Length: 546
Image (tube, rainbow, N blue to C red; front, side, top):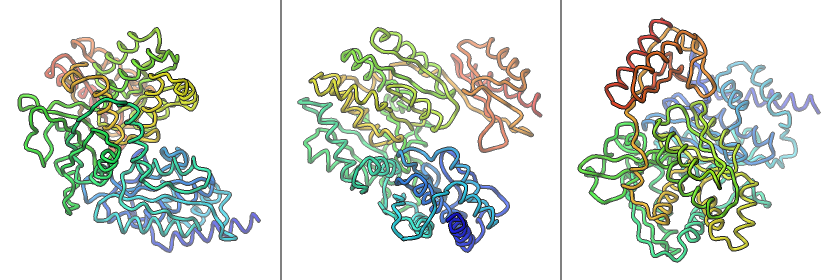
């Protein structure tokens, strides 16, 4: 039996190499938090191998997994892929290493060995495999061809493919999560995604007469299709929310993320294309190209007022603390940030938890940069809230917390019923622009909070992020949360000295994950002081590291 399986691994390795060597010959492509990303024309051989990795993961876990062909907020000429784990979340860390090795290897015996090591259960005899991969893609011109190559890789492994076509990234995550929760082993239709949202909104809004409209910048990406379908569901259930999409693509895939979308608005603080600088009183949101990020904004005296991921987390935490106060459920809540979260947001969150300490066990924690670190830390609480400033984030309810909330909800506790509905509204697997926006809309409506009141929760401290080119970025070692340098020690001493001279100053340095440079983040009470702090620390980095 073992010899047969070794033979199968060798046959699969040979089939992989028949597709040709990796297109990035001479370079290494790495599977990271965002999956694979590159120029679309360089990905053809790699995408076949992505299909193989996904199929093998399904073989090994005996559960469905997913693949999304997308490059998210990147320009239209780029593309990539994300593999969705069997829990609906991201691919587990050790399989990220397999994806990287398999994408770059040109050695048949090495590939065969990797397959045998990571998937000892791989056995296509009998042809009755339950291995299944749910596949989705975005609207890029290159996506149909690349998705076809992923499908070929899956089928080569004797696994099945369920092709969802053009969908958002979070919808693939949702489909995997729900499929593996079902007893019949079937992939639920996407109609269920919209129905889940509508049902949760009905509970949260109750009998409240609601008329709320948000204009949604869809980044000329897949979000436009999801918004259209959501509007139909909202209308069918007589829910007084409406989403008015713009930047919907209009048949030109080259417009994707071009001067629009969450990345553009959050980074540049400028209005997106497709809108005449916004109208006073209107409410706006911007998705990114694959609709897993959202930021909210409005116009005030001709200026864009941004409500970013940190502000969304703050809004959700205010709502959750109120419900926990009322329900007396005695649940823990964890607010997870990275070092890039503005100091004002951290202070606001800490103050909020302190205010509710009689009924809420809570803490604010800081982890390394990257969604996978945020998500992992959030799992340590009954309710974990995490968002990056770019608008990617979600709220996670533990199984124990869900059971406790459901039990109290069945007893007629109104606050527990709202908590239960909120948990059903939010995508628990991954950041979801549409889910998060609907959650923002319902919290504002139920709590009676205006955009202006929300914006006034706190004022961001002026900040700046720069990068310093160095000989070896790996010469810097940091603490796990990346807020302090452990090696070389003299660099942290220099940072501390520089910060001590600045009012409300904060600064940290960390090696870039993608470039041979060191990133410097600084904030202070005044923008000029933040700029000078970053410049001074940058000089210390250059002097010490060369």
